[in-house]
Amino acid sequence: MQDREIVFELLRSSVLGITPKIPTDAAIDWGKIISHSSEQGILSWVWDGIMKLPQEIQPSRFQKIGTELSVQKMLQRYDMQAAVLRKMIDVCEQHDVKLLLLKGIGLSKLYPNPRLRPSGDIDVYFGSDYKKGNELFCQEDYKFGGKHAEFTYEGVHIENHLTIINTITKKQRAIEHFIESDIDKAQKSADGYYVLEPMRNMVYLLVHTLGHMKSAFVVPYRNIVDFAMFLNENKSDLPPKECHDVLVTLGLQKSFELLLHLSEWILGINMAEYHQESIPLKDIDKAKKLLGDKLAKPEIPQSMPYLKQFVIRRRYENETHWMDKYLLKSGMDRFRSAFHIECAIIYRKLFHIPEDMLVADFFEKEKSAKK
Image (cartoon, rainbow, N blue to C red; front, side):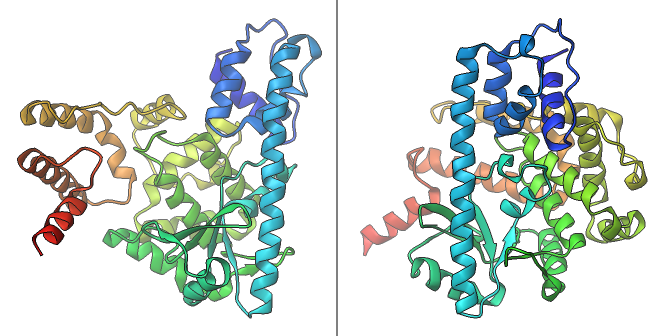
């Protein structure tokens, strides 16, 4: 078995509650398995799978000690976040504010052992009470990150969303409107926080996962697993035809189909009833090849002649262009983005703007100096 197949088998064992099937004579490089799992943020699931293996094929005692310590830290972080979320819910209830939780701990309830589902921060949405949320938890001392306010509360990183997703493009704005259109139907959990109703939550998780394409990792394993588990656990609330109709309306049907293939591949489950579209097999193969691997973007020094830079960037875009049809940008959006990038690079060349300074910040500084 290849390393990635072993990772998938161990991951399935944990999230599906099954016994891993790994041959006792398999040549396993546990160093690579553990390192890759840690990099992908799924080490706790893989560790859980490892503990179900026969003793003779488990990692060495030294590797197990180090891995268990890392997993314990992840579990402690989950417990800390759960405690902080509980405090936030109590504060919200005292001030008549609804806390809607996005992904994170809410998704952990999909798994046999919620604590094993890693989470980096807490994402919340207060709707029209966005400003009140900032007042309650950070006294307006926050950094705005594009679509949310970022701050630390009780030692945990919090993202208070002004909008649930990015709303830069026309397509994104239509999706945001769809998600928010029935926000009053958000469902209250037994723990006191609210979650999006299943159809809108499915769309949100899909769009959130798409946001990772063309990033440091093409699509992290955890995002696909979350999406697959959510869809699998909410089949009764997500009829295939109704799902497809919504996805077509939002222009997400091909993106959904791609994630569906990746979901089946990683978890080894059959979701045939949801296959309503046809996408190129070569795209599925490319996604599988890149899944979980670093997308190596070319490092281009600012000192390089502009034309050489341009050629390298266009070559990279041509190699990754197949992804574009699954993202939330139209052809015009992609053109504008590329145009702005090229303009920024030309400005840097002409005005000798340092690489570590934003172009807008440079011109603002120049403007202030002239006053």
